[in-house]
Image 1 (spheres, rainbow, N blue to C red):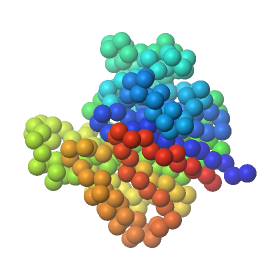
Image 2 (cartoon, one colour):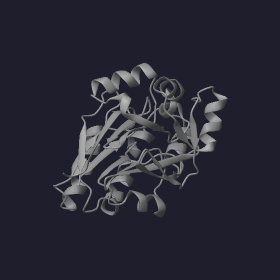
Image 3 (cartoon, helix red, strand yellow):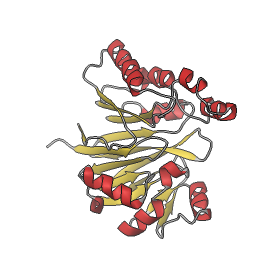
Length: 262
């Protein structure tokens, strides 16, 4: 029987982020950017069993990624895995669960037999990306980054499923009512990826094994999902990758349950 992993986005954007990865060894919850009530409601809607979660992983300490971390982890009696810098930020805000496991960015470890590889992302707080592996299947996740260096590209290359940020359209951002300082931060190497940059990464990241591409953390004010779909479709056509499935993730609606196999 072929190995398989199921992947759900419970929501992705500046108002909350969370990914449910269900493997034969158990499930992991990447980020907890909604309240406990909302996270559990979205899991129920997506037919994700919270009882299967054996660990919660946190990319960084911004509220759209960690809002429900303490309450959800304590309710489900699961540990939170985060860097020491992120743990320190959570503790100051009284958002730290009872069970915490720290790691250094770049570390690899296992949670109940599920492989976790971490790598640092350039963002304005200590941020990491994850590669989750089980049964020979790998899922790469990288949101909240302003650029993708060699180490990031190496970890994300040829994953079976890839979740990658496509945050903003540069012209829409420049024409928005946001402050100049905010525009500069978003465009900086510690900010976010724009649609063009993300599309330019795809030929290097999408390998023979890659079957699923999910474009995430889309700005509601400074982006257009249809624009992302068009840019991505054009890139995939040039790559002759009609075999690959891609979706633009939504903020307020959980995704379908994506099956990833090998």
